[in-house]
Length: 279
Image (cartoon, rainbow, N blue to C red; front, side, top):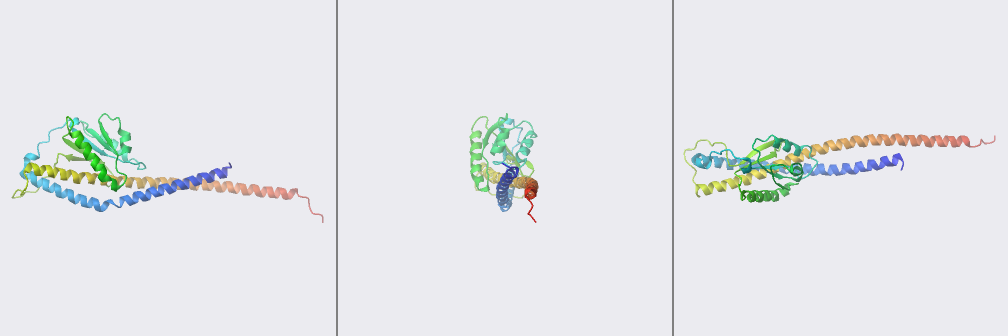
């Protein structure tokens, strides 16, 4: 196969790869546009639950407790990574944040196969779960996470603290204390809230509502950050492909020019070898 033919094949392959990356970039862009309205709504919902919890705890401080130190075996850390690749250092940033997490190290519940692949075999490994690739998969992932938490809670010694490490929507990794519920102090109220349930029953339901509101927000924010990282990664990859394609095209054009020059030389030599016409 000639060098020009090889270059033509490489250019065709680069064009196919570019089409695939462009499609992935478009999908990531579509995903990022789904989250803005939801995250705003989720933030208002969470703020309302935290305000209700702060109001309740201001008049029922015994439910707040002293939150004594908890050993690592009774502390579960939920790590929310990516299910797919092509998102730069998204998962590496979580691994770095885990290394910096305070002692004693908690047990790890890892969501996202790409992150789980980096952490499997970790001494504090608890379980790995598949993560969401698109927004529509988040409810099923949440069900799997809650089922896993219930299962591990039922086994001794049982966890009493739940935290999370996840990317914020704007990119950086942040640590979130989920349980026990500890909202900011409420402003002073003259009268306690009127409850239709026993305080213990009300607070248990409030904690469930809080977790049901907090976890989706973490997953949606993480998926938004992941897709933004993927967009940046795709942009860089496409730029490198364009540069490589331009380089190959220049090389191909140079070879084409060489072929044309050789053909002209052959024609000229052939013409010179012909006998001159008799005058």
